[in-house]
Image 1 (cartoon, rainbow, N blue to C red):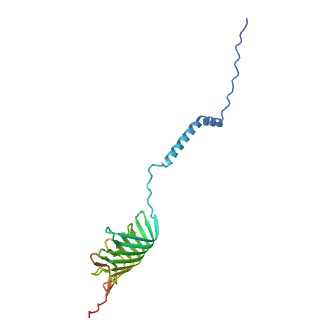
Image 2 (cartoon, rainbow, N blue to C red):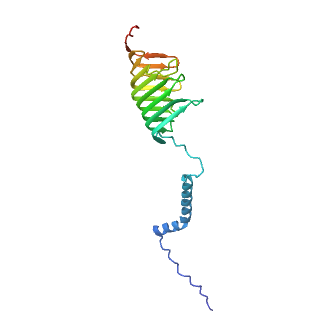
Image 3 (cartoon, helix red, strand yellow):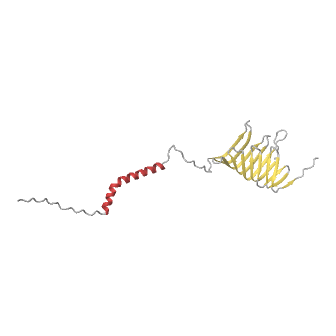
Length: 223
């Protein structure tokens, strides 16, 4: 009787142990595309967020206190509605500051005319004023001379008021002179040293502040 032999089983293959380096390579090969996509997405988001828009809104930049223009050897004139010259300002250099709309003038010379035709002359080492020059603060070696007009409309030969000091605030449209620092005034034959003063030409009022001293020369008797 013949016997049938069972087929021989192939020998079992031994599984080689997987090293940690091989496992790392497998993980990288499986997740590398996903990591690259995530990195590219993050980079695109950062570029979009930090790229300025051409026509988009921008944050306002605070103005700096620097001059936007300079003028040397200049002359500034101001006329009223009737075309009458009210004041003229000259200087060696003028600087305009746009953040405050003010001007700074070196070696300033002022010539101002009152409504009644009176004349005010002033000089100083420096001046600070508003944009149109109608208000000036004179600084350093300030001298002011005020000439009145007579009944015939002519200017007097000698000034009625003279001011000397280191500071003077002139309001040209209001014809007002003021100082909170010591000044010397020559007025109506008197020599006055005051801690401060104010002269309002339309009303003719001259007032002093602080301790003041005055020396009045007696008038010569009429013959």
